[in-house]
Amino acid sequence: MSGLDKAFGVSPQVLALRTQKLNLLSANIANASTPDYKAQDIDFRSAMNSAMTESSQLKRTHSAHFDLNGATDGAPVKYRTPSQAAVDGNTVEMHREHTAFMDNAMRYQASTQFLDSKIRALRTAIKGE
View 1 (spheres, helix red, strand yellow):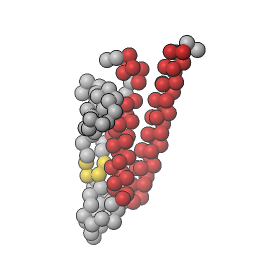
View 2: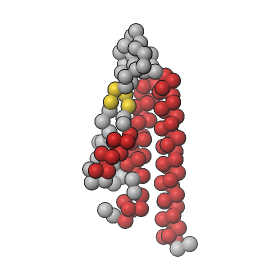
View 3: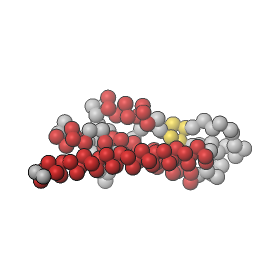
View 4: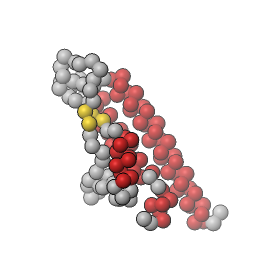
């Protein structure tokens, strides 16, 4: 593990998983009126635990992705069970999706701010201020 890996800790993995979750929730919202669309999500906690046990590295899925400590191929995608079945087979519940999206967006923002503070601290240490 390099010095930067130690300095950034789990932040790259957290951001990668939060991004994956935002993408899934966005797709759910976009497909709210698509017949037979099944709402998808990830279990963030188990994905993070899994990422940490797999030698603290996630895998990249595409060569153009950033290499953040081995970046991510993502967490296993799961389908949501709706609280009320729709006639057209769609399992997206907009109130649930909006709530989950906003919660994840706020947590993503907090994670980026935390990572930004770590980067600022490293800059300060390098400059010797």
